Length: 130
Image (cartoon, rainbow, N blue to C red; front, side, top):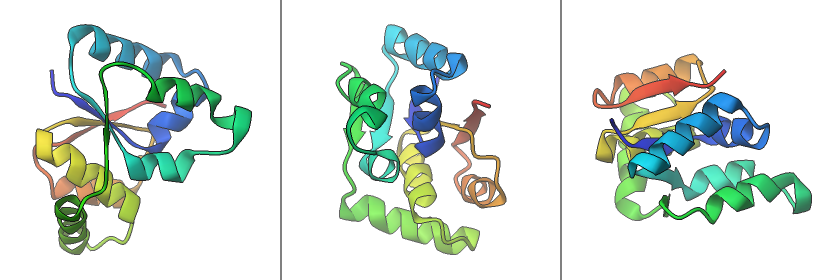
């Protein structure tokens, strides 16, 4: 199985106790698969206090890789946005991050922007969690 890269929608659904997201993460962690969370996703979703308590618990899980935004990834995301003709910076970073490893992206985003970005990264698939 491919590793998983989490986008903002996946974190929102995790926070809402979406059974599909929880089961997907549980299987991945038990199998020893890579689960990656780009830091920009945390910045997009994080709220204060109790609102982010569940996300805070996820961040502490052993096996979760928290990926910082460093220059090579930022450049890959920018190039991806140009090729896809899109302006969604966070989505582009998530797709570029996943593309580095050939991960599936856990998301609730079915929008044209995400589809266009993934279309430019042929080794990446969307795993919808609606």
